[in-house]
Amino acid sequence: MKTAKTLLALALTLALALTLALSAFAETDPPDEPNPAMPVITVQPVGGSMKSGQKITLRVEAHIPNGDPIGYRWYRDTPHIDAHEGAEFSIRGVYAGVASYSVEVYNRNHPELKVTSEAARIEVTQRPTLFGRMFDFAYYVFMFLATLLLPYEWVLRLLS
Image 1: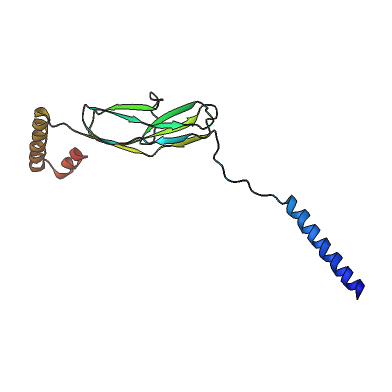
Image 2 (image 1 turned 135 degrees about the vertical axis):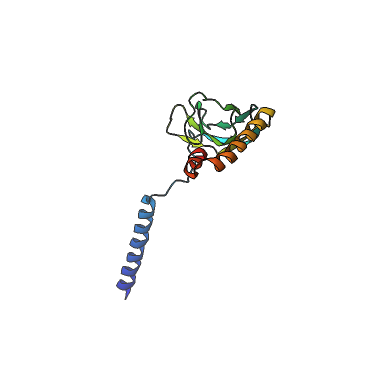
């Protein structure tokens, strides 16, 4: 009986030692820490509306925790705008319409480390002018007369 107890104690001791040894070699995942070279956007660009001919400036504020230099790429509805590479981007509304602008902030030392801002929606409204109103009136009179005098297929071509 004494030998059975001794063998059982020895087996438990070996199992405990083996468990402790294996747990010491077990890999633990390090906590998810942000990459210190990844840019962080602190202030997103804000959109708005403006009249044709007015100017609006979009701004972004960003930093890189380890102090690496920052680069900027502005986009209008996805295509890259070559002439604008800074933290500010000024737009002068020429044509009426809506566009979305975003900026990609990247680490100049590691260009693959980049983050894209939220899209800023800019709406340009046409300024009502006397010439514009006269043009609109002439256009509507022309289209009205065209629908009366021209075949239907021609009117469809004029509208497209």
